[in-house]
Length: 590
Image (cartoon, one colour):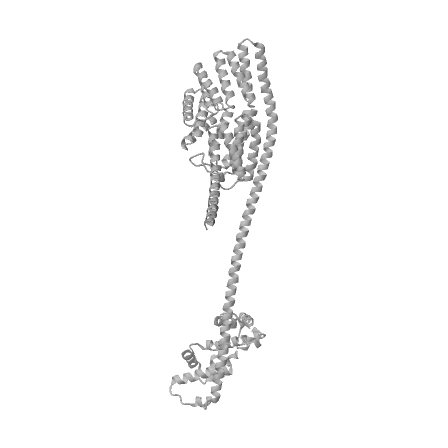
């Protein structure tokens, strides 16, 4: 007995452990997703590479397509900002293919007060594809320096984000477009920067607020309003102290530019050195060339041309190692300017030639890539359109199937009701026929007994009629009995010419007194009295096995009715069913 209890205890513990393990796995999957989003918002791409790998592995073990698509997106993002842009595009494509398998439902993207509290079940193809398109736009802006293609990806991402009602992503996309198209005459850019900042403030979204401070500082610097630019940069640095954004190097680089514009070179160099240090510390290869290049620009403004070139070389080296091409032309231009100021005319010409070649090559490459990318994008858009058409067809087919199922269900219910009603009606009809059949049999049996008693009685009917009548009531009863006798024995009701006057003459009275007799003794009028015998006879005929071939049109004529309509109406009112149904039910019972 103890062994059995022990075995049962072990089995129970195992089942409970399995359930707890499954619950933990579900929680872990959600926690990994939230951790990835937190690391992305802080630009912590080293940690994101590790966490996204864990998320991807667990998602594949659970065969969870949504979380796998997110895992690939975050992994691609980590690759992109860690200097492996070409590999990131392959990873993004895998994420996009998985997103298309998810499809879209009627539920839009739901955002809570906490931007990291995301639900795997609410993700749709639009929301994931919007993230991927935004990342591809960043790739082309940063790696291929193809601003046109980058814009196209940003615009597509924006359209998908609007369809998914993904407001936070829309803010990030607008921010990328601001950096891509920054201009001192662009009022739209400044308006969008203000919207991003205000959205972050209103919704306690510190990432959006942090981005808004940087974009506002950038645009106010373009407009030479460095007082406002510094105010927003100070707020940006304050947010960094609270949330430790790993891309804070960009804010220090912009601060260095502002101080350089103000000719405060010592402070500018301090900020530039801090920008380089932070980019290295947080492993931000995408921001390090900007920091070096800004440092070099400040040194050039100070007249330290040789040191400026050393910084430019570091910017070029970092760009090459991380496959970043959007800074090369500016690097060669600055080196050419430095060499010219150092009296190195040949080198100055060499670097300026490289800058011009870079611009020319970039122009040609952009045109080739533009046509190639445009072809790819058109193909992708066509496939997306075909996929949407297929999804719509599937949705329409599902609706049709649901309508068909509902219609069939209603028809089945109605058929069931009809069958049940039909069976109940048949049972009622059979009950009516049985009651009348039994009544007829009882009536026949009673009539036989009456006839037998009449034969054995010493008093004949004529003698009974000759008895003295003591009062009017007895006379009325006598006449009523005679009326019944004429109907039952003489069957005078079969005469279609029979009327109240003729019937009164048969009884030796007048029509008025006849009506009084029938009313007082039978409770009926003349027509009801006669028709009751006709209907009873019809029931008797229809209840006789030997009369199953008796035509109905002959029955009503033989029983003294002047029209079939009157016969059918009176029969149904009296019996409850039509003569034809009565006969059918009687045959079935027989």
